[in-house]
Length: 446
Image (tube, rainbow, N blue to C red; front, side, top):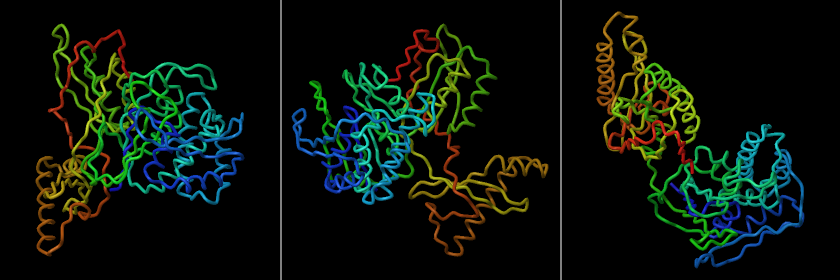
């Protein structure tokens, strides 16, 4: 699988992204032609080689006349529609990035995506950066984009609304669900444009370079110069082996010792209904030898904040721990078996090179048990036997069982309901006994 990996060791900005793409081999003239076709008067894309922190890198600068316009999403759409050079796929990538910005700004300012003003991201240089990045990633031809955790930087920055702490409200909104890392540099390391690119285009996050055969490495230089490290965005491009049986998930944990069991049970149901892959509790001994539980939630990166909010609201906890973890899992597929009781649902799970494992679905079997007045365990045994019979008949007919795609006994794919209960008990549940009622509110979200 052709893969791009963004190493954001000093953050990410639109100009750095565009520069890294060009440095990695994307044709600068093709990007320049696309930008020229937007009809932005007096705009020129300057591309040059520079030394940044002792490293040879590409730097891009958008030269343009002074402008004071504040644009809406409709204005951006008009600019994109002017071009007959930028392809439909490239325009769509650009739209996704602009739409992410519009959604974040609308939420921050209590407006709608149609009415909200683009400020910094509506400026000509940001428009050029976003459209150029859209063209560049399209020409790069990668199937997935992976990114390192994102540093935001520290301090304050002047924006259109005045002086704001870093990250600015719009950038912070764009980074919801994105793993962050602390880099002790007093500067805005990740700009709104960079955050929008991350939010819109990145498929998953990894603190290390994925296993891949490298084809190219691009170095995009930032505008600022830091004494501590080179202000460079590195873009690795290569061929990575696809691993559909692995992904990244978040583990959310909180320690509870003063919450009624009914409340914990209710919170669990709310979490599962709102998309948690799994929710479970582990008995724990708390401060002052109080008995308590660790409430754990496994979820996808894109709904971390929503589920974390449920934990705070329903349990009253003073702290939630976040862990980004890599998960190995069985690929799975839902199937339907015909039985003497009618259709019964089940699920197949498999790993490459291993025989498939069949599991009857509880809800379907429970319905049969109630309707027929027989023990649930007998229904399970019968359904498993029917599945084995189907397998035997298919084998007897010489059919090729490719569990990676062809176990279709009637049967939609179901990859969302994670009943594998991958409670990684080898994971170090660090029972931080200073946290369960930490009124110091040391919620380090950076």
